[in-house]
Image 1 (cartoon, one colour):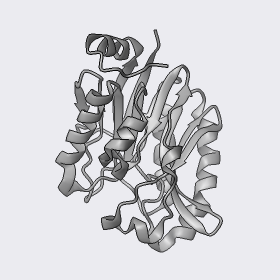
Image 2 (tube, one colour):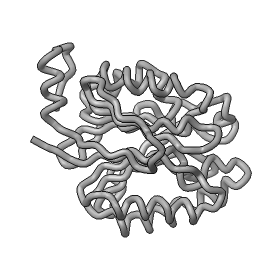
Image 3 (tube, one colour):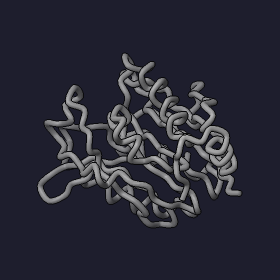
Length: 243
Protein backbone atom coordinates (compact mmCIF):
# COMPACT_ATOMS: atom_id res chain seq x y z
CA UNK A 1 0.00 0.00 0.00
CA UNK A 2 1.23 3.48 -0.88
CA UNK A 3 2.05 5.88 1.93
CA UNK A 4 3.48 9.36 1.39
CA UNK A 5 4.05 12.58 3.36
CA UNK A 6 1.62 15.31 2.36
CA UNK A 7 2.14 18.98 3.13
CA UNK A 8 -0.16 21.98 2.88
CA UNK A 9 1.62 25.33 2.89
CA UNK A 10 0.20 28.49 4.44
CA UNK A 11 2.51 31.37 3.58
CA UNK A 12 2.12 35.11 2.94
CA UNK A 13 2.61 36.63 -0.49
CA UNK A 14 5.40 39.21 -0.61
CA UNK A 15 5.42 42.00 -3.18
CA UNK A 16 8.99 40.96 -4.01
CA UNK A 17 8.76 37.93 -6.30
CA UNK A 18 12.24 36.63 -5.47
CA UNK A 19 11.38 36.57 -1.75
CA UNK A 20 8.39 34.34 -2.46
CA UNK A 21 10.50 31.97 -4.54
CA UNK A 22 13.21 31.82 -1.87
CA UNK A 23 10.59 30.96 0.77
CA UNK A 24 9.05 28.25 -1.41
CA UNK A 25 12.44 26.69 -2.16
CA UNK A 26 13.31 26.71 1.55
CA UNK A 27 10.10 24.91 2.48
CA UNK A 28 10.58 22.50 -0.40
CA UNK A 29 14.13 21.69 0.68
CA UNK A 30 12.94 20.86 4.20
CA UNK A 31 10.24 18.46 2.97
CA UNK A 32 10.80 14.69 2.84
CA UNK A 33 12.20 13.43 -0.46
CA UNK A 34 8.91 11.80 -1.50
CA UNK A 35 6.50 14.43 -0.17
CA UNK A 36 3.50 15.91 -1.96
CA UNK A 37 3.29 19.67 -1.33
CA UNK A 38 0.54 22.12 -2.23
CA UNK A 39 1.27 25.87 -2.19
CA UNK A 40 -1.20 28.78 -2.30
CA UNK A 41 -2.57 30.16 -5.55
CA UNK A 42 -0.19 32.58 -7.34
CA UNK A 43 2.17 32.20 -4.37
CA UNK A 44 5.15 33.58 -6.32
CA UNK A 45 3.66 36.94 -7.31
CA UNK A 46 0.18 37.40 -5.97
CA UNK A 47 -2.32 38.56 -8.58
CA UNK A 48 -0.08 41.53 -9.45
CA UNK A 49 -2.57 43.04 -11.88
CA UNK A 50 -0.38 46.12 -12.36
CA UNK A 51 2.72 43.95 -13.02
CA UNK A 52 1.32 41.20 -15.24
CA UNK A 53 4.12 41.20 -17.79
CA UNK A 54 6.75 41.07 -15.03
CA UNK A 55 4.87 38.32 -13.19
CA UNK A 56 4.47 36.21 -16.33
CA UNK A 57 8.16 36.64 -17.20
CA UNK A 58 9.08 35.46 -13.69
CA UNK A 59 7.17 32.18 -14.03
CA UNK A 60 9.66 30.32 -16.31
CA UNK A 61 12.54 31.54 -14.15
CA UNK A 62 10.81 30.16 -11.05
CA UNK A 63 9.95 26.87 -12.76
CA UNK A 64 13.59 26.36 -13.68
CA UNK A 65 14.82 27.06 -10.14
CA UNK A 66 12.14 24.91 -8.53
CA UNK A 67 13.00 22.09 -10.94
CA UNK A 68 16.52 22.10 -9.57
CA UNK A 69 15.24 21.52 -6.02
CA UNK A 70 12.22 19.32 -6.54
CA UNK A 71 13.83 15.86 -6.66
CA UNK A 72 11.24 13.09 -6.28
CA UNK A 73 8.81 15.39 -4.50
CA UNK A 74 5.63 16.67 -6.12
CA UNK A 75 4.87 20.40 -5.88
CA UNK A 76 1.49 21.80 -6.91
CA UNK A 77 1.09 25.57 -7.21
CA UNK A 78 -0.26 28.16 -9.63
CA UNK A 79 1.51 30.96 -11.47
CA UNK A 80 0.64 33.74 -13.91
CA UNK A 81 1.49 32.56 -17.41
CA UNK A 82 1.32 34.29 -20.77
CA UNK A 83 0.07 32.33 -23.77
CA UNK A 84 0.13 34.28 -27.02
CA UNK A 85 -1.35 37.65 -26.01
CA UNK A 86 -3.38 36.35 -23.08
CA UNK A 87 -2.65 35.78 -19.40
CA UNK A 88 -3.81 32.65 -17.61
CA UNK A 89 -3.57 31.41 -14.04
CA UNK A 90 -1.94 28.02 -14.52
CA UNK A 91 -1.62 25.20 -12.00
CA UNK A 92 1.62 23.27 -12.33
CA UNK A 93 2.43 19.85 -10.93
CA UNK A 94 6.21 19.65 -10.82
CA UNK A 95 8.30 16.53 -10.08
CA UNK A 96 11.71 15.18 -11.08
CA UNK A 97 12.53 18.40 -12.86
CA UNK A 98 9.50 18.15 -15.15
CA UNK A 99 5.99 19.54 -15.40
CA UNK A 100 3.89 16.38 -15.21
CA UNK A 101 0.55 18.17 -15.38
CA UNK A 102 -0.70 21.68 -16.06
CA UNK A 103 -4.15 23.24 -16.24
CA UNK A 104 -5.31 26.85 -16.33
CA UNK A 105 -8.03 28.21 -14.07
CA UNK A 106 -11.34 27.68 -15.82
CA UNK A 107 -13.67 29.36 -13.33
CA UNK A 108 -12.54 32.95 -12.80
CA UNK A 109 -13.58 34.96 -9.74
CA UNK A 110 -15.30 38.10 -11.04
CA UNK A 111 -15.46 39.77 -7.61
CA UNK A 112 -11.66 39.73 -7.50
CA UNK A 113 -11.29 41.20 -10.98
CA UNK A 114 -10.02 37.97 -12.52
CA UNK A 115 -12.42 38.07 -15.46
CA UNK A 116 -10.97 41.43 -16.48
CA UNK A 117 -7.36 40.25 -16.48
CA UNK A 118 -7.23 36.50 -17.21
CA UNK A 119 -8.43 34.29 -20.00
CA UNK A 120 -10.32 31.30 -18.64
CA UNK A 121 -8.83 27.85 -19.11
CA UNK A 122 -10.69 24.82 -20.42
CA UNK A 123 -12.87 22.88 -17.98
CA UNK A 124 -11.93 19.73 -19.86
CA UNK A 125 -8.32 20.16 -18.71
CA UNK A 126 -9.44 19.56 -15.12
CA UNK A 127 -8.65 15.88 -14.98
CA UNK A 128 -6.85 13.24 -12.95
CA UNK A 129 -3.14 12.67 -13.37
CA UNK A 130 -0.90 9.98 -11.94
CA UNK A 131 1.99 10.53 -9.58
CA UNK A 132 3.72 7.46 -8.11
CA UNK A 133 0.55 5.39 -8.38
CA UNK A 134 -1.66 8.10 -6.83
CA UNK A 135 -4.53 9.65 -8.81
CA UNK A 136 -4.45 13.42 -8.21
CA UNK A 137 -6.71 16.27 -9.29
CA UNK A 138 -6.52 20.05 -8.88
CA UNK A 139 -9.19 22.67 -8.31
CA UNK A 140 -7.96 26.26 -8.22
CA UNK A 141 -9.62 28.37 -5.51
CA UNK A 142 -13.04 29.52 -6.88
CA UNK A 143 -13.37 26.26 -8.84
CA UNK A 144 -14.03 24.60 -5.47
CA UNK A 145 -17.57 26.03 -5.57
CA UNK A 146 -18.66 24.10 -8.69
CA UNK A 147 -20.18 20.69 -7.96
CA UNK A 148 -19.81 19.61 -11.60
CA UNK A 149 -16.03 19.84 -11.17
CA UNK A 150 -16.18 17.68 -8.05
CA UNK A 151 -17.82 15.00 -10.16
CA UNK A 152 -15.24 15.52 -12.89
CA UNK A 153 -12.52 14.55 -10.39
CA UNK A 154 -14.40 11.58 -8.99
CA UNK A 155 -12.00 8.70 -8.41
CA UNK A 156 -9.06 10.87 -7.37
CA UNK A 157 -7.10 9.73 -4.33
CA UNK A 158 -6.01 13.32 -3.60
CA UNK A 159 -7.49 16.64 -4.68
CA UNK A 160 -5.26 19.69 -4.28
CA UNK A 161 -6.78 23.15 -3.76
CA UNK A 162 -4.28 26.02 -4.22
CA UNK A 163 -6.11 29.16 -3.13
CA UNK A 164 -6.21 32.84 -2.30
CA UNK A 165 -9.54 32.58 -0.48
CA UNK A 166 -11.17 35.75 0.92
CA UNK A 167 -11.10 36.03 4.72
CA UNK A 168 -14.75 37.06 4.94
CA UNK A 169 -15.67 33.70 3.39
CA UNK A 170 -13.32 31.60 5.54
CA UNK A 171 -16.12 29.32 6.79
CA UNK A 172 -17.07 28.54 3.20
CA UNK A 173 -13.51 27.37 2.52
CA UNK A 174 -13.54 25.09 5.56
CA UNK A 175 -17.00 23.70 4.82
CA UNK A 176 -16.41 23.10 1.11
CA UNK A 177 -13.00 21.44 1.50
CA UNK A 178 -14.37 19.16 4.22
CA UNK A 179 -17.40 18.30 2.09
CA UNK A 180 -15.26 17.59 -0.97
CA UNK A 181 -13.18 15.05 0.94
CA UNK A 182 -16.29 13.32 2.27
CA UNK A 183 -18.24 13.42 -0.99
CA UNK A 184 -15.38 12.22 -3.20
CA UNK A 185 -13.99 9.90 -0.51
CA UNK A 186 -10.47 11.19 -1.01
CA UNK A 187 -7.79 13.26 0.66
CA UNK A 188 -8.04 17.01 0.15
CA UNK A 189 -4.92 19.16 0.51
CA UNK A 190 -6.10 22.76 0.67
CA UNK A 191 -3.51 25.53 0.68
CA UNK A 192 -4.47 29.15 1.28
CA UNK A 193 -2.24 32.19 1.50
CA UNK A 194 -1.64 33.74 4.91
CA UNK A 195 -2.36 37.34 3.93
CA UNK A 196 -4.43 40.03 5.66
CA UNK A 197 -7.33 39.49 3.28
CA UNK A 198 -7.20 35.67 2.93
CA UNK A 199 -8.54 32.94 5.20
CA UNK A 200 -5.18 31.38 6.04
CA UNK A 201 -7.15 28.18 6.72
CA UNK A 202 -4.99 25.67 4.93
CA UNK A 203 -6.00 22.13 5.72
CA UNK A 204 -5.59 18.43 5.11
CA UNK A 205 -8.79 16.39 5.21
CA UNK A 206 -9.06 12.60 5.05
CA UNK A 207 -11.72 10.56 3.19
CA UNK A 208 -13.39 9.96 6.58
CA UNK A 209 -13.67 13.73 7.15
CA UNK A 210 -10.99 14.14 9.79
CA UNK A 211 -9.33 17.52 9.35
CA UNK A 212 -6.04 19.13 10.24
CA UNK A 213 -6.13 22.93 9.98
CA UNK A 214 -3.53 25.64 10.02
CA UNK A 215 -2.31 26.52 13.50
CA UNK A 216 -0.04 29.39 12.53
CA UNK A 217 2.70 27.22 11.03
CA UNK A 218 3.91 27.61 7.45
CA UNK A 219 3.54 23.90 6.72
CA UNK A 220 0.89 21.41 7.80
CA UNK A 221 2.22 17.86 7.71
CA UNK A 222 0.27 14.63 7.45
CA UNK A 223 0.42 11.31 5.59
CA UNK A 224 -1.45 9.99 2.59
CA UNK A 225 -2.47 6.37 3.16
CA UNK A 226 -3.82 4.44 0.20
CA UNK A 227 -5.49 2.00 2.56
CA UNK A 228 -7.60 4.82 4.03
CA UNK A 229 -9.07 5.63 0.60
CA UNK A 230 -9.78 1.95 -0.05
CA UNK A 231 -11.29 1.45 3.40
CA UNK A 232 -13.67 4.39 3.06
CA UNK A 233 -14.88 3.34 -0.38
CA UNK A 234 -15.48 -0.21 0.84
CA UNK A 235 -17.14 0.94 4.07
CA UNK A 236 -19.60 3.25 2.30
CA UNK A 237 -19.82 2.15 -1.32
CA UNK A 238 -21.36 5.03 -3.28
CA UNK A 239 -20.01 3.87 -6.61
CA UNK A 240 -16.79 5.87 -6.84
CA UNK A 241 -14.41 4.00 -9.14
CA UNK A 242 -10.76 3.53 -8.26
CA UNK A 243 -8.31 3.16 -11.15
